[in-house]
Length: 329
Image (tube, rainbow, N blue to C red):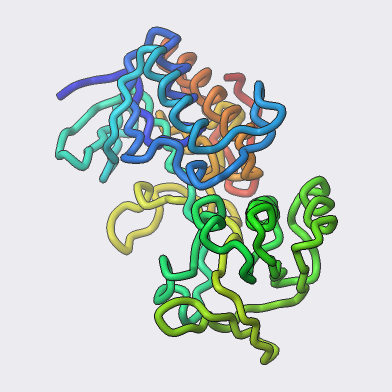
């Protein structure tokens, strides 16, 4: 069985930057990036706040660039996924990672950067019309919807960005805020409010998505019906924690915070020895690309320190705090 210094699971910005930096430190590292490096970034037309790209960069460019950089640093990046992880019985030895090909890897350090999935509305019609008008990729589908009315559900940065992308392609956008207040940062709110093709509806709770062969509209909980040709859902992220479950239907291996994410210290160390969490699955992450990059670099610095010294903090990160800086990375 192959023993590595580190295995990184995840092909987003956090995982790829962690993998590249670990390899640059001269440590043996394998990154299981999955079939589509970049993850959710691949559907974003312009990723903002990335160092070196003041005007933004397409996510479908940024993901492959991060993967190439990790490979150039000497990391073995694989287009496959992990299906199981396990620690040794006394929690002091290496972690084992089983790949989808059935190979078992051992690593002194394991970085989980599995990211998140888009939350679902969980209303009638959402599943039925996925791919038939229900979408999560404005840049993919906007050219097909020019001149038509579409709905964007959500009030965060991603919802604003996708609404602006749709408006730029000639769509009339109904932006449905489920509450009365924004979650988006002011810069995004101001751009949406200034866009003449975007109409904002507050307190618009979707009860159902309706149609025949394709989406024809949405029905709101207050009884109103809106005729739209597509529905784009951006209501937040749900962390992908499947590998942390002890088994099907079993509890998590460690305590999560109130938002269902993994508490970490400043080095992105979890409460389990040798296990690190980086990116949107860790507690306190703000969903920004720059934060994921910073997470990857912080985790890599901690891995380098811990593997080379054999040390590990004696104080575990608390479940009610997102970062604990007691132990320097």
